[in-house]
Image (cartoon, rainbow, N blue to C red):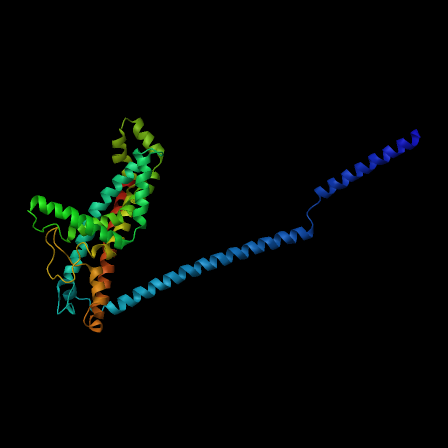
Length: 343
């Protein structure tokens, strides 16, 4: 019995060792041809998916670019025929079926510049507070961000109604009662109220762009300035803001682009249907290129006759917006070069 038990145990050990050896050999053996083909097919499928995604994205970009090019080509093709010195230097006449658009050009430029002067400093100051002074857990900062998000989602026509009710009917009327004895001087639609309304409309764009630019400034730069003895205000004014100037000007460019073409907020706050004279005071009404386009397209007594003037006005509006944007981008580029030269 002992000899048989010894033989069984020896056989068991040999079987286990052979099984272990087989397992080790199978683990150390290279992958089979089937698994290699599966991996190759998986890579091919992934490459095919990537190609399809790239082609679809490229097709979408080409489609959007084609739509933009066709739109601009149509506008410039129909509008370049009426562009002349008379068209840009004379007021409209004959029921706006002849003459030029000088009051609309001047009104749009003044409105955009005044809006920028109001919106950019206010937006930068708000972004500096949120980024540099407010604590992450501050309820005031959370409330400000909530208000900015809500402002960004409000339709533009609501801004126009707000401007009419608050700036014109409340603030303007209060100024007239206190200073002019109730005579309507500021309690009427005018350039100043339209600019303030557009400033509220574009304020979220400036705040968001400026705050992102401030966050992109490395913390080490602030720490180095503080280590040299600068106060927090000196660090912000002399170090942080110059570093973030490119992003701030980007927000200003976006604000100009949006404000120059808006019509709904100024319908009730200052835009005039027909006004051949140029605005000379902040409380004067004004003509606007965007509103002029709306009038020519919907309220002209002879749409066919005014169609070339309509396209010409659109071309001038595009060129004016492009000029303002180019000026802002030129200032941004010059500031970047100046900053690099100082470094």
